[in-house]
Length: 528
Figure 1 (tube, rainbow, N blue to C red):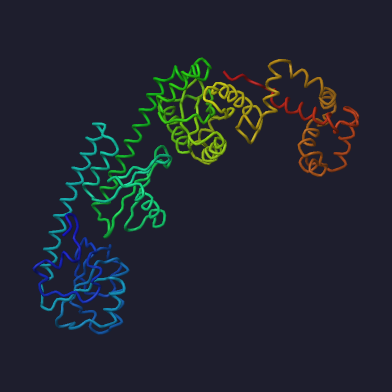
Figure 2: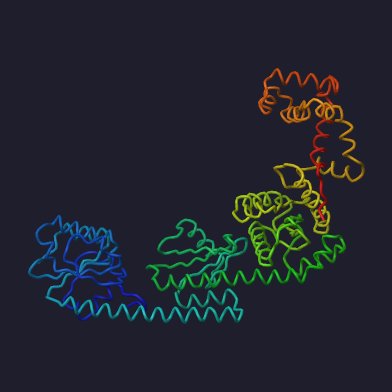
């Protein structure tokens, strides 16, 4: 008898079953039953909850094999655990069709060769069920209290897994994404691979149960338990649920501890991005945090929030943890530093310099599809990625280019957030720092600007769309919602103002450059 559940074979050990015989479905004797019903009608399936052991005299089954078959099929469909029939006035034998049906579905059919007291059977078995339920609840309560104490004592993850194993005696695996899985009991490396392959093939079935751990809406880890034979009991699954919740809390606490460490490291990180640390000091600091790190370069990711919104401490912490989790799951070692209206993430790649861009693209795709960032975006949050550098001592360069990229992303409509995709805009931005670029743009486009002011001619808009469509007259007219004749008239006017060759060679390049510069510098604001 299982300590916290009754199987059909356990009922057979009761004194009331001394005249009982299993005549079909013997392979299903391991099934757990949670209640006992006396049933004397055929249409019963809508009255059952599943896992019942059914007792009957067969008064409604004696007339028709077809009715008998419908009755047994209904019990199987309702996920009953077995059927006990008393041989007597109504039934003296079980038809072969019924025996075959029960054997096919491993549905136990037990017959009593003598008259038995159904009242005594139900009282006896219900008493056992209630005692076991009480014992299970008491044990679960004690287990939950033990988990809480473990959390207060700052017990490690392996201690929690050991405690669970003592209650369910199954192989356990904790797989934190981006890290090596933790096995309890420990497993030889070659056996681990066999186990992982089996998990991949069999998924979540009756021998394997897997539960995800979500932290800040991110799928952070999975806990898996495995049995060689049998099925997981209700008690084992409740232990599994409580342990998974405890592990999630421990992992969350670890995030907050890292957050506290980041605050303590704030000065070092500030010096790092401001190029105030030597190469040796940077390496020493990184190795103190990640002893096995190899220099694979990295980049800087900046998350900017509008200064106009009120941000609570909890919102800031939540945001940091959310992004940290996202970066860690995608192959990065993140270092966080907060500055005024933005958070700086120094991202060191664990895999190799060549994969940095690919991994960041995956991060951005997940981020843009997430409900969390969509809410941030509506509030005015923006992000940008700096130059990808090959050495961690060059992170300060990546930081400066990330700031420039953030500025550009605020000013122009661009589908990219990467410094490496916006070189022309960066060139314009640098020129703007050296000369009065706005004056240069206005001087070059002055004839068109003046004409539009005097005649409301929309030549500036026409020229911009004409350049964007690669001089396609059909597409330009379509985007401007004008007829071809109107477009030809405007192009003729542009030739008059800019010269007949305004769309050829360097003239066209100059125009495109001027429009990009105009987009960037109009209404500009400094990032502080």
